[in-house]
Length: 330
Ligand code: NDP
Image (cartoon, rainbow, N blue to C red):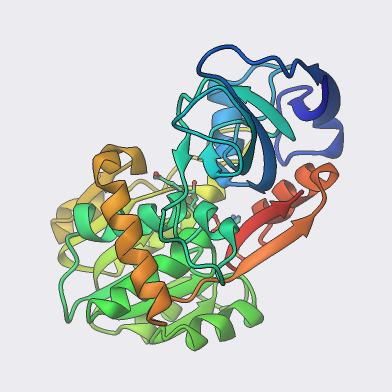
């Protein structure tokens, strides 16, 4: 038997999550695997904003928290996933998992020895792909254009801004602290500001790009977006990636509404979910890994050590503690 730990959603979050919404459970897992099964041991776990959003759509009290992890295969009855390899899998907040292989992906064969495997949950993983597809597939970003990105020092935003720079754009980033503003400048953003301290968001956006914005990669939604839309150029494009400023609302926010800006500026707004382009993932991850090895893409992590700290790491990410990808190391 293997002693496994799992974090369970004890009750639905009301507003911002609290420690008492989570419960740590212990389970005994059988080591005798059926044909096709593997036993996984978590090495790194991801904490992501979607967990807050999906908790109310896809989860019931008592369910193990949803999530992706980087795990090592420690027993195997599945030739596709032999003992010793590492996989990314949708195992939830579990220390050990018996899996039939569904949804598991092997880490790229040519993963560099000097690069932590945790990046398979970040820049060379789902958040990186989100940035890439939002820019290439949704916004069809072009050299010379001006891009606005918010939550810009986070996992998705920091990669989106850097890829846009690689593609010859002017990039403006919004983020929540002075240290993060400095980090964005280090990454090569043309302008960055702290949305929490600027006297006027509208003025900050105008100052950063008086001519307006061709494209807007929106991670935040809510009030920020209602102002950003007024600063778009005519025929501007908006990729709606997320709306983290609304995920912890007890009641849905109301207005101002986007229609007037959209009509007057003839904007195009498209929401997207990263899995739409899943068939391109392997080739896209290889491309980003090359950028990383060439020093064109930098990725930072905010690592919390200890499986016991999963809820704290999750809540910390929601309130902006992280610069780069928020990760838990077991
Ligand atoms: P981040 O690493 O960016 O972490 C979340 C960040 O959000 C925090 O660090 C904080 O940074 C910022 N934030 C929190 N509350 C607010 C607020 N009220 N207003 C503005 N910013 C806030 O997370 P990810 O990069 O993983 O995710 C970014 C966005 O992308 C989320 O909306 C997420 O749901 C979305 N997403 C969408 C996907 C898709 O397929 N469509 C896939 C993956 C992510 P700060 O200090 O700047 O406030």
